Length: 372
Ligand SMILES: *Cc1c(COP(=O)(O)O)cnc(C)c1O
Image 1 (cartoon, rainbow, N blue to C red):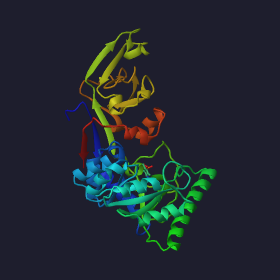
Image 2: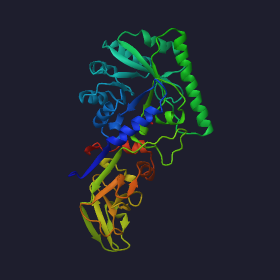
Image 3: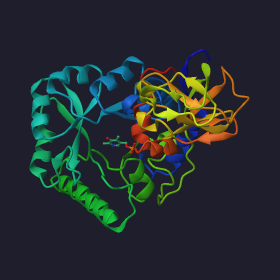
Image 4: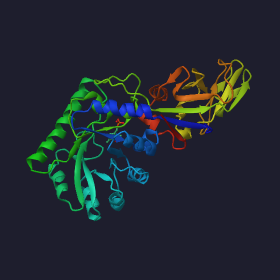
């Protein structure tokens, strides 16, 4: 690999995760693969095409442009846009056959007035208070079914504490589930056609596996990681990490005692140090919070600390304790390298964030290499 840094996607582990997740779904429920934000850093096009090969027939993205990118790359399955799309773009939704989320009634009317036939899912707010029709607003939800040009093929809501098994959080989630159920029942009572219903994302599935809807919208679990290290979930699945982030040592400096490393001179050598430059930085998604002892990487299977500040395109690590490390050696930021492994959950934790944030910020400028 000649790149300065790259992302490796394991097709094998992705296939394994699809099979594992699908076997945990109730009869008739389909996996909707969430591939927003460049498939959480895994490369949206590469990932979606692999997933289609593995039999996945529904995708979710955040924006209309993410959907268009997938269509242009040849993805033929259903693609749901989870976020708001301006009515002026109804033509693009229609031309590319994307399914749009209706975030409220005004949004629905705006889209309908454009006069391009589109397919849509109604978003219901059951307590998160981000997007959606209030679950009590059945009249407006019902009205969407008679809009011209907007055909309702689905209805969904989103759980906001399904990752937590604390008593109060479970109670809240159960209230959300009940409210969503009420909406579905009310629509049935009013004789409306039953659209596809979905409620759970990764943790919704892992902590409430007994629920039975038409889809689960799975993101982070599909990529084989949890949001935080040592996550406790009701359903324990054997999910395997799909992404590795690697680079190479390109230069080694010998730093005398008392000298400093990098911007702001925040690392001082208290012994003579060998400092390796690694050409990957925060513009590649490495959190700047991992600077100077905040994080580590693997060289020859061993952990070495990041010293000095993480720069936009580079970082520096202290390899004094690995005397046989040299220029050209592989550096593992995420994934397994030699005998060691650095989990995305751990790196995210070191940076004070969750895996979803870490991964989705990754790789906008790194090549993605798909490995069997
Ligand atoms: C991002 C997102 C998902 C996927 O969430 P994960 O926790 O990664 O599984 C599902 N539904 C909605 C509405 C989302 O925005």
